[in-house]
Image (cartoon, rainbow, N blue to C red; front, side):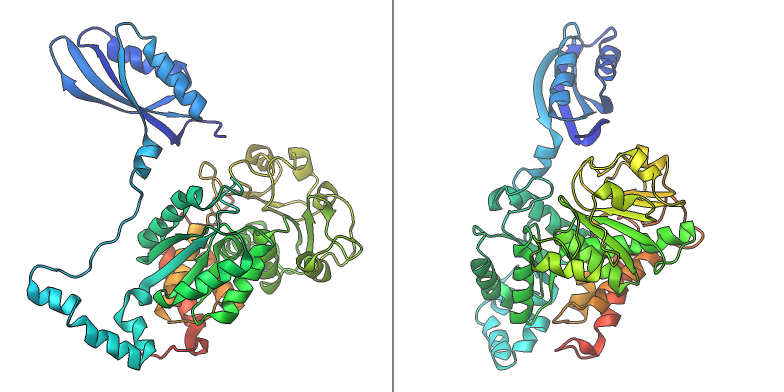
Length: 469
């Protein structure tokens, strides 16, 4: 829940008030007294006796929004006509649409775009299927696939409820990388059905972005699709998070003057994101890691290890630590959380090594209060937009797919992920680098291009089907 008014809970209240007197100032006072923030006040209709005013204000949550409406209703001679939730208004009818790239103004244009002219293009592709990348939307299209089992922090809410999130993802693809992405919300959580469905629709796409599929099923879905398809498969919850974390850690360690191979890292979370972060950290040079899940440290002596946890135990925690998260944090140089809210305190962060780095990425409530963490850690990052150093996957996935599509890549490799992380870190110059700026803004104009170029170069001749111009 937001602790301060947020645009996520922004409402517009249409009111009718007396034209004279102090009505407008009383409205402002009512909202501010109730803890809200007025972001706009527009007179939509004016008369000699009455004004119709649209008051837009930010609240902390839905209950607070209602409290603001109630406060406005207490102003003398005010009549409330309509209350609109601006977030819901943005989603009315969906957030994306399909548009034609070619004009269809006359019979000639229709005959080339569709029958009979289109038949020639279809036959060309039948003779040489690789031409589909050149002559169709395949060259710039990504399928955003979910089963609705792990949507944001909301859990298993199903495919229909996942659609607004997938629409948002598609909008981000278009905004930051010019990619046409299509939400595909599957009404099944059976691994075989998911894999088969994606396999069947794959010919129309240049890449597959798996989204909000719960662990451990997401690992098998990704593995099997990578074996079956000749287009890249990228699970953003895993690999997008990992790229951003490694990029941010690279710069954070520069700030505190430590080497990546020397630091002790405690990682909270052994699910999809945690496992992917761990794998990329190890590939990026981290050598000392203890991973904790809700049962404590993952180590070889535990008798509950599935295949994923067994891999973690075999590649981390060389000293065999078997205690809890708080014990694992003591003396650590770096804490990375991709787990659950409120599992650490400021005192836990105080027990870390001098010049510690804290990435508390659980959303919307981090593993430790950012304010408390900042009292003790040298660098703090979160997944939230209301604190510095936001770790946001939109820093990674648009550029990654732009590079994959441009290279006509067939696979995603660890080398590509490392290249993306390195490029993302490099967007922050040495002159800009500091405790409150270790990762660029999602709106930084160089982010997507830098990541895309790095992935494209890494793909190079290793990507099957890629030929240099």
